Image (cartoon, one colour):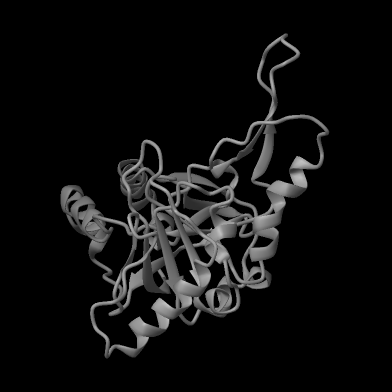
Length: 265
């Protein structure tokens, strides 16, 4: 509801109201995978034996867009929002799709989650191999820094040995989020252009299942009577066929599978 007398309030009070209308803490968005993030790095060296590197560039993932309507209300509100953007580690850039400014966030490999749809999975696993074939010489492939990945539940149901393919290159993965009932807006043909909508993952009541590095298998769920937990356990047992997840060098020995749903912010 409009407040016609708002402009007559003292400036300090108006600014406080604008600040109070902004969230103190943001959740972590998911970033859809897209083709083209694997790229060549050529070291600056005159030595002929220096190998090029095929690197997964996390910064090449599309930014996600956060809707902050206060930004467009007035110059005063925009000033407050701009300072909030800086505190939150966000950026302001031009959105060519909407032909206006947008508040965006780039991928943080330590905390954020890469999302791969069922339709994209084959391309996701094959892209580095296709790029390798471009050069007829030895190359280096640094392990991507991605630590968290989200996959549709239906993908696990249809892909035996999925984790073996995942860890072929993405060896630092610590968390696999299994997304139930993926919204149609997250399908590749439904996504917007170069800026993606802000979607977050929300825990369900299901149990988190952990990999036992000594037994080389997932620990069964504690509740034998929970149908959803037993279903997830069956899916990840099938997905882990042929996988031997070793303790990652320089990282905590952690690998978990967590059931979630995707919600739009």
